[in-house]
Image 1 (cartoon, rainbow, N blue to C red):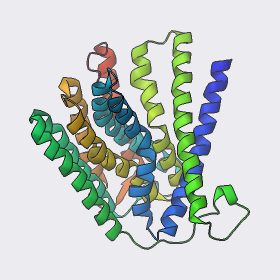
Image 2: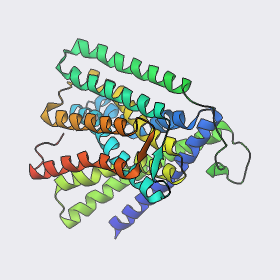
Image 3: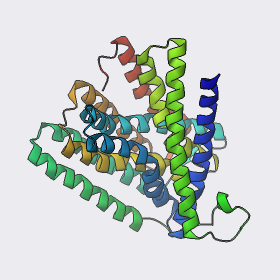
Image 4: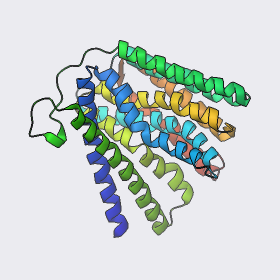
Length: 329
């Protein structure tokens, strides 16, 4: 009974937090006079990538025994799960939306986000064969690449469009909210996202133990869904309101942030030996990103085709189960 209540409470928290987050991000972009592409690729991506980024930093800073594995797994696993589950869920949302059932975005956004991701992620993975000193230079290069990407995204952004719906925490005030109120709602949303995701994982762990679900199934199938739940749900909400560029930017922009900023941490501060499992995951990630870039090259993609992005993750899970988890990161 307690586990069921915990599960329901965690889902409610994540849903509420995602709604608060999307609303606050829309206002932040509007107040900064950013177009939806830049708002999704930069602001939304930064906010939803915080949990995955903080975990390895804390592990490394506290000299956790598993810090090296945690950081390496975060660098390689986060974008893999995001581009497969996140893009796949976005495709499902597009199909369920009806109408033309197409995701429509600025083609420059797709080429910029996924292009930078492919370049940065590939460089990060290949740098595993380099000595420590050279990897420091690679880490600096990745951070520089992200800075250039931010500047390019801001320069390519159109002016903000119509004002969003009223800020949720002051819905009774129809006028433009103060930036501090937007920041406050954003902070509340991020905190609730982190707490809700943690409660979700805890509830799933307890459920798996009670039902005697194998730990491998929990680790490969259920927990990954929970860790990427905020990004995925945010994109689904934006698709529902026809904010396709925000939805796509949230997924691709987060992956780009992870391939540059998060990867620089792994490259510089860990032994950075992905191993065969990591290389398999990285290869599937690159193939998925290349598929999405090809699909969205002209800025339009059918939701049914976008759903296919989830196939590599399903194949990876099947391979893990078949080999008894010997391919796990």
